[in-house]
Length: 109
Image (cartoon, rainbow, N blue to C red):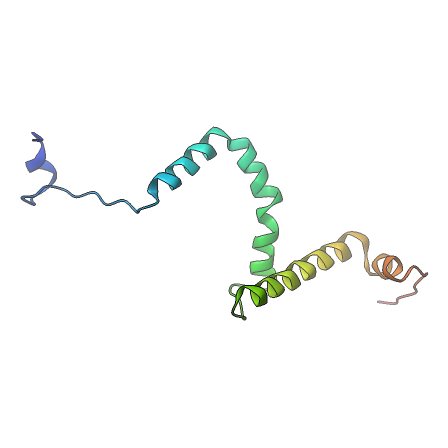
């Protein structure tokens, strides 16, 4: 029996600690992250940025479709839009059209 029970709780049965069923998995993930902080920092910069951009920039906070196949199609279109937007920002409209058609393009913007 704990000698400090009367100082930390008034419940006759004592305090109860609840843990989610998968808490051990979450604890291991936290431990791996703490051991590899630099790797996770790099992942945040490279991998997670597109998801945040798609969520905020394209307003995609939830899926409009139901079913795995439809959701995969919807997220594929979102990634395509993200990649096209990024390519246009990097290369410019003229260069994108030139590369897609293989011809010289004169676009006035």
